[in-house]
Picture (tube, rainbow, N blue to C red):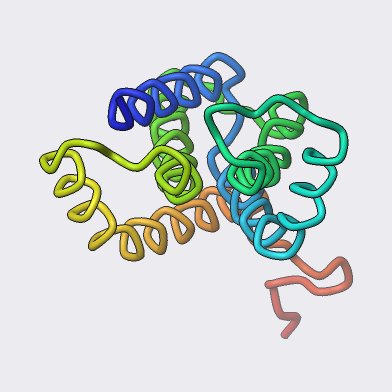
Length: 164
């Protein structure tokens, strides 16, 4: 059940990013911002959910709050920002976003929905062994993608040509 949910989340987020054609750099960095928000504000949002009886079953309030905070920044940025112009780059960006978001969401999901089968647990342990490396590479690619959008900015008063 847990692995099926993870695959569905990956597919849905990848499809959403592809349909909107938003750039991976912006979405990837907003995911990183969401993780920082989650680390610092999960308790407050969890308390808000609990005090207002927000239905989050089968998740716990903490897991639901963490997932909400991680996904809120990129979902907001799906409505605006730079887009890819070609389908090939949009596919790359969408898969990158889906993969990075899924890796960030695995923790909160598995804390509420622990895998029952040993094979699923083993697969998730293997993924967790490589998670840090994959997240680092994905965030570096997001930075590179953002750099490609903005390029090198020149100082307005300086020119590359020298007067002799």
